Length: 294
Image (cartoon, rainbow, N blue to C red; front, side, top):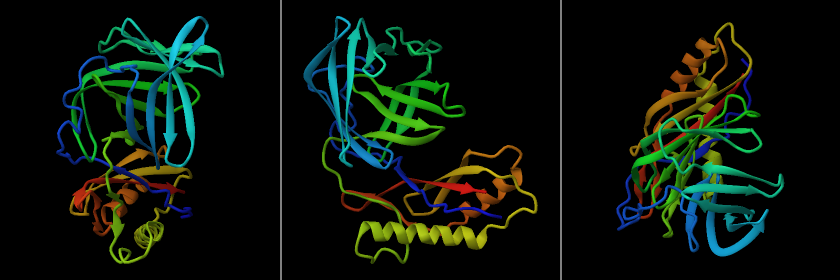
């Protein structure tokens, strides 16, 4: 078997409640996507973090006025988006294409469908009672919207909205990609492999952890006699005790059942980690995404 580096490992912390008053926006009410002056939300964004602010600045396109949302990423990237609300519906203006599209309809009912103005994105409301877990909160009764892009075959995005707050979380093909975090400062630590904890920097610790995961897979994976070429993606949940709680296949290769079974077996056998932590050393569940390139 030929497989390349497995170690584009994505840290997504999920599942532990965090108890500060209103830290989970318990008192929020109103629209599922409020476009309000003064709004400021923090999210993870893949391997980055961002702060989104609507400070009251506005801009006119095609005789309509939009509030400007400014996103500032920890990596240094910035982005502007343009939003307006009308009769409960939310619209976004794409400056590059010169078109407006509806991002959320005024009729919030399961089964409601719509498309972006350029026809690339399709949307459907699939639930009004979805749940979503982050390291800090257990959100209930969320609006869930499924969306797909016609140019990204096989990729499904699920967006979760809380009334009075807006976007809480985003999953890509069932795997968490982004979620909201409290506005307070939090100290977060990635999960790490035993034997790596005494290294000096976070980068060294992560590199050591990824190397140990790679060596485990390399030593334990028994390739089937016949295998299909392609890319397989597995997601494992690391529990608060550092052990593997569950493993699922996020993306697979057609007719590669033997490879699926072996990949699942090997990931389930990963040794315990030092679990991810927040604030004063409180352990939290975390998610490990491992690609297999055959």
